[in-house]
Image (cartoon, rainbow, N blue to C red; front, side, top):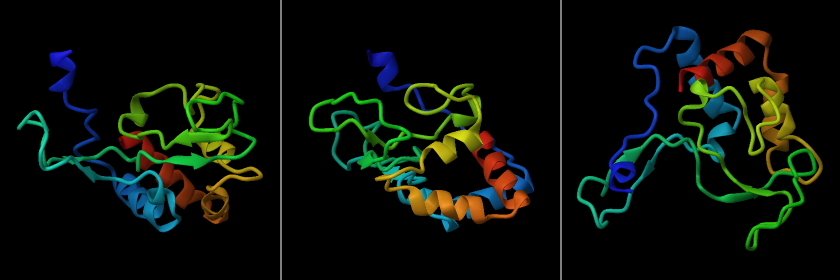
Length: 147
């Protein structure tokens, strides 16, 4: 358990391509960063000086959101309903082969599209993504792969 406490999170590509850097700006501009917040700060007082008051590039707000019928799994956990999920941290997403809470796709564009459905808080963000040109979409995917 102590080992896990001091293990750092996945490191993003230290030299992202120009495409990935542009994709980071697109990610923020279309609203992805509203729920997949790029950086959070740990608490100033914790039981470990190593962990306190540190920036964490988590890409999550750690909040529970309504995600609609496309992502619903009809599992109720605590007070989270069948279509509610905590924003998945995107750190290390470039090293994953399956996406979404249940691993239902290996395609990042499909994962983005699954965020849209009746009742989803992400509908406008998905519409913003779909309205992008193909190069901007690819740049955003390259950014995600660089995480």
